[in-house]
Length: 197
Image (cartoon, rainbow, N blue to C red; front, side):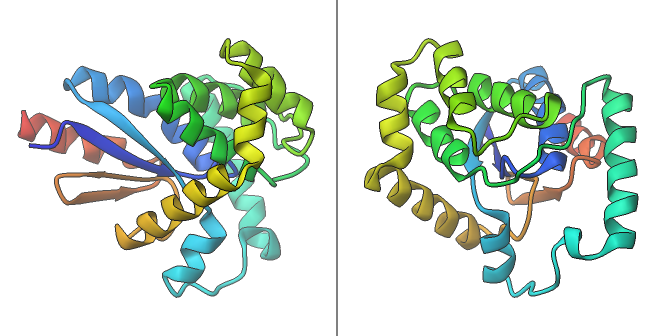
């Protein structure tokens, strides 16, 4: 049996922020690890044939979505602040650097805290540099990677691999050919993990 839950996410996704609050501890509870797979939600939607408007283009939907996000944050007892910008690609590429150092969980958790917990502007690279410093990494090496051809190529491949795996949005969790979509699926995930063990 597989020993890792695949977690497909985009740091621009607030629902993935909420999913990451629960997923690592749930995985550990059942002796599993989380495999962190960053991807690009707009690309994933297009690749899957979902050409509908973004949530931000549907006022009625965004109003309800924001209310739900605040409810979930309160339910999980975590902070929530909408960032001024959703351009997070360098942060997503940074996940690949973190994977190489076997520190993905710590990096993703800290990145989500900064972007969706504190509402920092992800386009201000000083915020990303600050995160790298908190991780005790060589900041210059990290920043060079996230802007490098190598980093960008690895991220493009990660997005293609996500599409091949059947990813069409985020958050998506996969294990043993089971797929769960959304931060509100943890009862179903745990039900499956109980049966599995």
